[in-house]
Length: 225
Image (cartoon, rainbow, N blue to C red; front, top):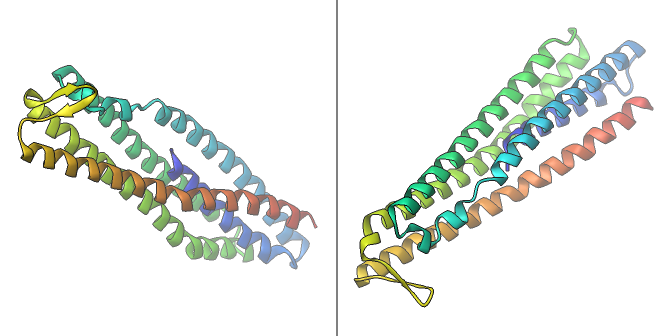
């Protein structure tokens, strides 16, 4: 999920609401400036959403779950496939974060291009007010996903070292020593817990995106009144 891009979009949407709100009872010229800002934000949001959708599609092609099944990690080719898939996943995470940073820069450049006055001041005030909380949401998701990727890495590394001792019988993994049993159990628990942390970190992202979309729609209604 390329939610990092959508997080940046959410910041832009909430920021423009501050500018629209400040213009609601102002003179005609300032309302015109707020309307022009809203049009620019619309275009920016559409562009960033398109980038996010394209990245989402590439995330959807990642198939780590099947690559790290124990039966898939019992030979060198399976381990290599898992490592390659994990590398693609990490690459997409980095690309997502880069797109989010670019979206932030685009938003700041848009506000900086506004004529000096109440609308421009409101845009920057709104940006400062919401950016920290939204960036915290983005950082929490990014950390959770990196932690999960690290857990996958540790799991694959363990199988690479121990696969000579491992077998699958009646669909179950068997090991040579109790120590190996304990080690793979701990690694599996780490996989599960970090995966759950990712799921939890995604929830506030989805909520924020939904709220931002609704507020952008409301901003259109307010400025046209």
